[in-house]
Image (cartoon, rainbow, N blue to C red; front, top):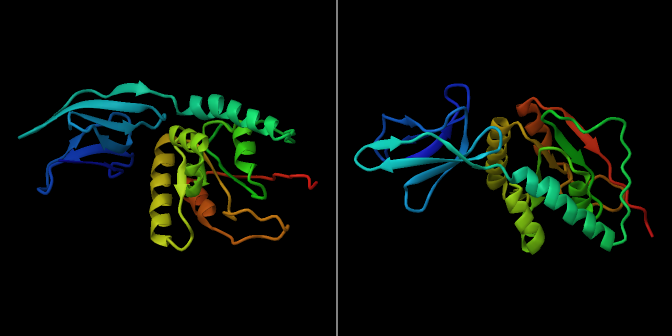
Length: 231
């Protein structure tokens, strides 16, 4: 048996189908779903709902397939990033002697938004988390997972970990996966078009992923500028 997500009806839903035989299929999700994962013993299927909830469905995948109703396990992602993550980022900036000053004309958007910003300091990611962008996921460089607190926090927050530019096919698959999740959940997302730190004031290598993502999702782009005073 294979579990997969499809938008063949116009909405992303989770299905189960026999494998390798084809033909029949069963709708497992209710009200939308993406990212299905089997429990190790195959008796339960997990997926992410459009509201960002982790759902569980009891299944019996023997000679024939049977499933129960979806049950909400938890909705902890926003708590991890907007409460625990924000406190951690603010504490780290304080320890580094960084005083965060935010200039803005209006509150953060409450609808799905693609945030973009310059990247000039190793502390930028903590500045962004400290801002408390509502219901927002992040694209971060994969090497940051080696920093244990950030790696754990990123995993809990559903971070999209990027790979180097030369690995184009992997990057395409990553953005396609991100689009599926963001379309289903309505969450906002942050990423840097330059992709790497640039401290000279010049523009770095321009990555189009943010703009393709915004166009495909029909979401507005919200630019942010991070100014780090030079010593």
